[in-house]
Length: 142
Image (tube, rainbow, N blue to C red; front, side, top):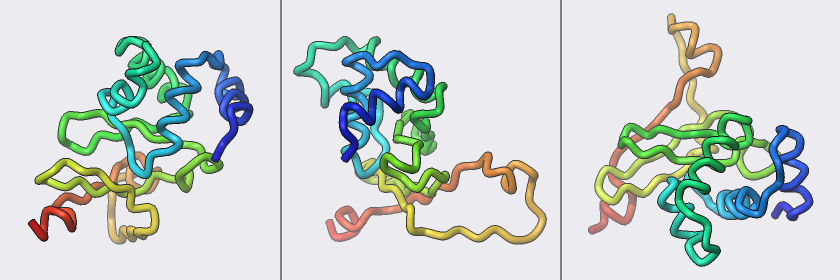
């Protein structure tokens, strides 16, 4: 778990002020096993009194700075996750699984995707997102 000092350093390294609301957003995202949406973050921080627009600006500013990665899973909901290898994820883009029934999202960091043959340059540069969709275990059993 990263300390508040580590989170402050992370923000300052990316030329962002270490405000209390940014630190709170980073704490929430650091503790999540999968990307979180703006409503998820807003709900998690509801007791702190920050308005939705402040939290949204924090998410977009930190994504623009490279601290967060913005994930589009094709369901018209932007989700955010930490992008730094020392914080939570491997530091590389990784596939995500979206349950088409309940909407649950899972990071698939240990899934290795091999792409062969002739592909657009964006694939080789890593400018693509790999997403898997289907029913999660809970929905399959239901």
